[in-house]
Image (cartoon, rainbow, N blue to C red; front, side, top):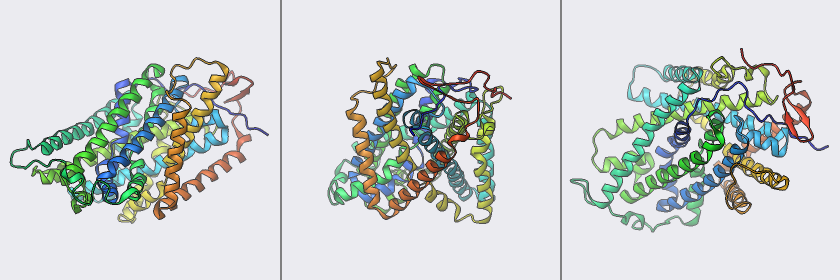
Length: 478
């Protein structure tokens, strides 16, 4: 029997309060994190200067995925975003699995980011153990998310602004160093791009290996699709938001990596340890270690803040669609899904205890749990857009926004994703994470199939033309 898609098309209870500028900065804040400031060193060590190619390929994929998301958001804003669209395109089980997988990923990432930030603070300012700082960060950012979406938007805007300012300053200093305009420092030029084994010293294998690291650094941009549902005019805003976010991220990522591999030899040991600090140390800029630690702390807390928001809205949407406990769709008078927020940070409080008992083992364990969930999310987004766009075209629907190059660019995104998955299967560490993620996805699909007859009465109903809300649906206000 064919499974009938069920989906709600509105976000009840939540109150629009985010501006286009705030959502744009949220997308930047979600993507510019420790993956750029720290993880880029590992990618450079694998591919050499040719890591620029890895970033361009990953960036192209992200641009395509975000364009597909923008088309669907403009037509149907939803706090469930890609989970809602996957459900509408491929059925309840797929939508449920994608939504729960994303929520589980963010819950773990929230705990990892709090632990990572706490470790840096405890190292810089000894006196309090790591678990105390984890508790401080989780409590503080939970409070921010409970204050209402307007306050959250302002807080995240300034968080992201600090990171963006740091990247811009780094790019300016880097360009000055390359052309020789920094006093007392000889011009770096661009010789390092080819002087140490050539532009691609490890060949196509190195570029492919770095791609597996680089692609996950772009995770976090999808929060703009979730946040758009709480803006004043999602259909109007989403096109400009996606364009702004993607152009800036490509400039910041590719520009930063270019500066690093131009100023320093790619095989310099300091690049692997901390590429941004290594460049600034070479230019004899004082206090660089403390400054970079503070920037990484801000980056982690900003991403953590955005992930609490994204996780709470996703599980709110799952509850709204009858795929999670009813209590999670209740909102306060300010339109805050308080129980959804608390559920999303609960594991963060558990991590406080884990950091108390096993402070050295917690962060590596959390990072290994996250796995390759981003690939599943992007694949579900691409498939959903292909299906829903064809469905809309067949019905003659006038969409507010249409992705360019359809269906060829949508197909190209799927081909790129398939290629990355194949590469991952030939890498031992990536293969383990990918298989764990696929196993979890299949388990979530099975649970959704087994529970598909247990949806709450009065939440959704099936209609020949689509899905609506039954009259008399219980209010979500407390």
